[in-house]
Image (tube, rainbow, N blue to C red; front, side, top):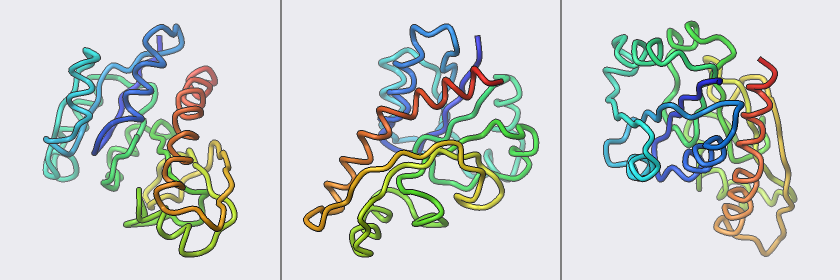
Amino acid sequence: MKRIVIFASGSGTNAENLIKFFQDRETGSVIQVLTNNPHAKVLDRCKNLMVSALSFNRIAFSQSNDVLNILKASKPDVIVLAGFLWKFPDFILHEFPNKVINIHPALLPKFGGKGMYGNFVHDAVVANKETETGITIHYVNEHYDEGAIIFQAKCAVHPSDTAATVAAKIHELEMAHFPKVVEELLKSQ
């Protein structure tokens, strides 16, 4: 069975969705969730779902080998960033080439880059009067949101939409597609 490690920073709805999706699958299993936020709701979700979860600080992540050593011990087949807000260090990416993926709440290359996450993206989509938006699942490289695209799904943006209504549409796309794309990726390995 393939091994999935998730990185999250906030509420953890995508992490929970992935954990539940893979609970009864033979393809893979979420073996651990790591967070840079010791107060993240994802920790409570993991506790309720009986999945190992750890929090770490910036030193452990990018200035030492602490998180890298946790990952090496976990031996993940894929590392999934699900609402994780820190840039992934190059030295971890080099240890896990083509194994780190991210979900972005827009159709990259639009509305990507440093500082473009969550409501910042949805506000920009509405302000720019976009007629469509969506999600992008992509490989992570050394630049924010510039890794090779694995999958995109679209939804319409209407003139009456607000950032909140766009966020709800994006959330639906994430819940529907993210676990299936991760599963297909695992099957292709």
